[in-house]
Length: 376
Image 1 (spheres, helix red, strand yellow):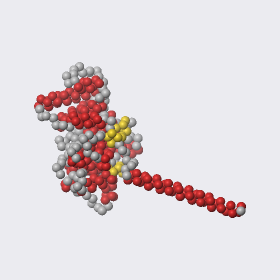
Image 2: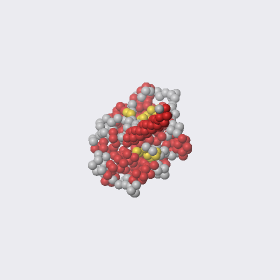
Image 3: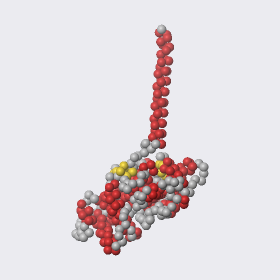
Image 4: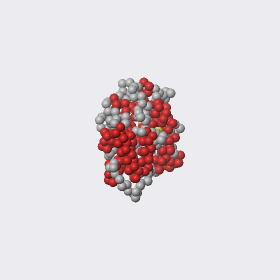
């Protein structure tokens, strides 16, 4: 009996380890399968957040989004009030006042200029003295001794990475203008969605930034889950391509757009990847981005809720994707939550602040029409 017991013991040990390995590999397979399905079903996607200033953005839309009566006295008064506001702002943030004044003198678009003031006021609403001076058109007694703030009222524009971004995007102006001419999307609107994606990646703690992006003043090209300088996902790229061809889609732009993304080879997946991840030319990154926001614009316009003049909404939709784009009267501003030097922002708010900041206005000014070729 003892001999039998000794011979059976190794068998039991092997049997035990056999069961253990089987269970281990089964668990590994379960987790890998779960992870795969989570990615495919977008369970792991950042659901984003509603920006805490969403109500303020809607109030601005209600205030400035409607065409006012063309009365010369009203226009003169409004313009005088605007110049007053620029002077008040100059006491606190000279840099921002200069950008806004420059934008107005070049565009002569008083509505856009007033929205630029409103974007600043969002950050100054807790400064009672500033707000009082803004509201008092006849205010006198400017305090010459008041200390001016250096830099921009938009804190994230004071970081070194923003300066690098401006130099980098200036190199791509010909590409952005070319895409704008082909798609009819205002160049500044294209840059608005680029800003959120790039400023998220321009992190001085990252080795990539310290080694390449910062020193060379180039844009960051993503090559894993999101692709290119505008962070287009493969699934999103495929939807954009399909929408160009499907005349029954609410996102359809018209025949003149149908062949803008035609492939030259039969290896569409490989060609798409190379298009979006090219370090030499970011043309397709901008083309996909421009077509993306124009498709959203078309969907909402067809539903009776135009968002042509809402860069913050277009950027939010660009960030969160087609699946959650549901036209409605009061859309929410938000998207992915971004931490920029320990300060929280949302993708939509970043786009809004850039768009109305006056930064890069010489390169990407306001256009009278945000989207050309609207009749498709």
